[in-house]
Length: 162
Image 1 (cartoon, rainbow, N blue to C red):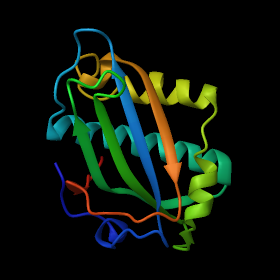
Image 2 (cartoon, helix red, strand yellow; image 1 turned 180 degrees about the vertical axis):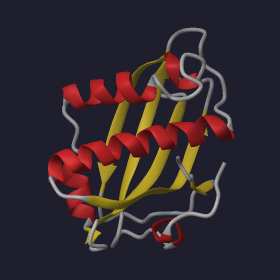
Image 3 (cartoon, one colour; image 1 turned 90 degrees about the vertical axis):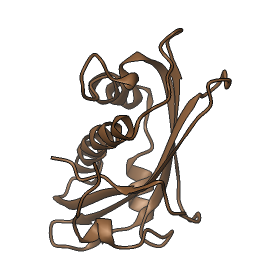
Image 4 (cartoon, rainbow, N blue to C red; image 1 turned 180 degrees about the horizontal axis):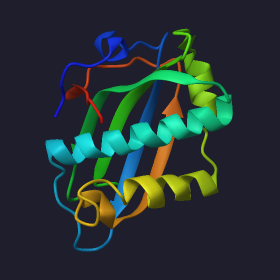
């Protein structure tokens, strides 16, 4: 799924230019399975659409490039709390090509309960193939951002979304 990307996807994500996000997913009983590479890629695309929407809402300026990079995930079928976790770095630029600072990204993505519900119901559950994706069976999730932390390489450098 990854392919050549924009300049943001080709730049190294660091604590100076990105905020780090960690998601934990809880599933309906009997729905858990190990996520595939394409499951994670589709989830990252849905998350990119959501992050863009939230940034435009909170920053109220034209968002140019947006990249979710350094993507990593874990799967542990024995974990009762969060059998699937996903971590990514978020970097963005305004339409005039000025970078959006990590503290603005972090502040803009401090999600309240209504925003979390919107993310889950309108983006996570609609991860392609809609109604058949692993993420369609998520019954709870957490979304935590961090700034000023070391950003490590991920298992998937980036995803090119349509």
